Amino acid sequence: MTLKLTDLNINKKSLFWIIALLLSSLFLIWPGDAPFINDEALLIHNAITANSKQQFARQGLMGTAGVFYGPLPTWFYQCCLFLTKNLITISLAKNLLTLMIIFFALIKISQELDYSPYFILVIFTSPYLLMFNRALWDNCFVIPLSVLLFFAFIKFEKNPQLYKLYICLLLITCMIYIHLITTLVVISFFLALLILEKQWLKHHVLPVFVGVIVVILAVAPYFTDIIGQIQFKESQKDSTMDALINSVLGMKYFSFWGWGEYYLPEMYTNQFTYPHNLTNFMVFLTWLSFVFFGLGFYAAILELVNKYKGNISLNLEDKVSVFCILTVVINIIFFVIVRHQHHPQYLIGVWFAYFFFMWRNFNVRIGDKRHLLMFGVYAVAMLLLISGTIIYIHTHGGNRGIYHGATLKNQMEVAQKILRHSPQKVLVNVNNYKLFPHSLQTLVQLANYEENELINSKSKKIITIDYKETGQSRTGWIAAKVIDMTK
Image 1 (tube, rainbow, N blue to C red):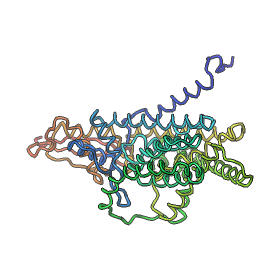
Image 2: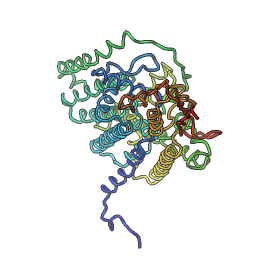
Image 3: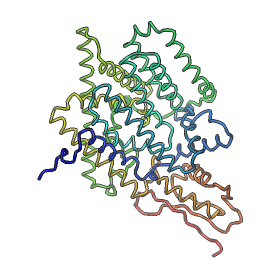
Image 4: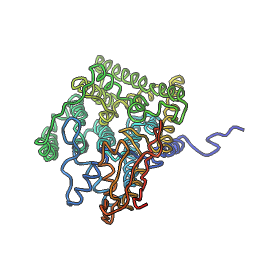
């Protein structure tokens, strides 16, 4: 006898929410597996320092270009540290909050555009979103704010009203207070307004002008602080072709393209969860995201050109396409000009535009069985790879790379052991601690609830920190060994 959904009294809407709940657990399981290396430790240290001075931080970390980021993420961590000193709890709370914002914003967008919500489930298979959601970092806060701006823009375009524009301006202010790379989205936002709502803006010049002035005044303290501290640095440059490829292929967030090379090189070894050849094949299948994006982008441009030639008014979907096309084009132009060495975090403010065109293509071709088959193959490959990644990180304690390293839980255990024994000295044989000694120092400082003596010159103990496994192993596990010099 064949079992049907109707027999279980499950309708399509309920099925969607059940699948979403199950997939979201991929992001939330094993919260102690979050990375904690360089910037994360600096951010937490800055939050601890600011709290000790009973004031809010005035700026964030210094970026690779020699400019300080905004202080908003540090404020978030300051508030969290008032509630708990457990970084795993903070990571889980941040992960859950970010995931809920992204997911429910996209649900509301699907309702406004009358799009199928099933494509939203792709976000739960993104390795980049998994990493950014878990990490106690700063740039990643732009991801949920950018999709909220996207949603606010859609609400405004559906029925232009001042308060909706003010919400957009508030979100823009928050994004600037996180990372200046968001100016690319800000530029595309205002260009879209000028193109789509020229008449409305003419009738609301004064209140719009006031809103923009308020934004300028709101970000003025941040810019005043950083202007005198800018330290322009020579950074590595990409070739023009590499810059073009990396900026065009912004839909990489929804594939495994570049993921293994950047974050998890072990994916391409026999140590990974799946056999080497199978992993490579599945990674290749996730490149279908580029096909989905290309088809959606082309269809959107074709639609706009036809309506322009026919002098036909744009509908809400068309207006959203204009905003997203501008976002993609401005992103490409900027990175081709500056040729700054590409890192995945540079897409944090524009990812929604690439996602939109993939989603648009899915929605248009939802009745095409061949296309659904392609999407099904893509979705299975993404799901298997994200599951394999999560299992690998958990069972291997992270890795030894500078973008993940040992898991947060493992590092916290080592820090607590140092605190318990108050050794005469700590000898470090772990590469990431040699490069970023503040990582361990911050964890020990945070674990020192009772202000115990951390390093005791009279102690007869020495602690060595090594990888648990030697030889060719790439596991991230580290361990603190106590050496009693009296024996």
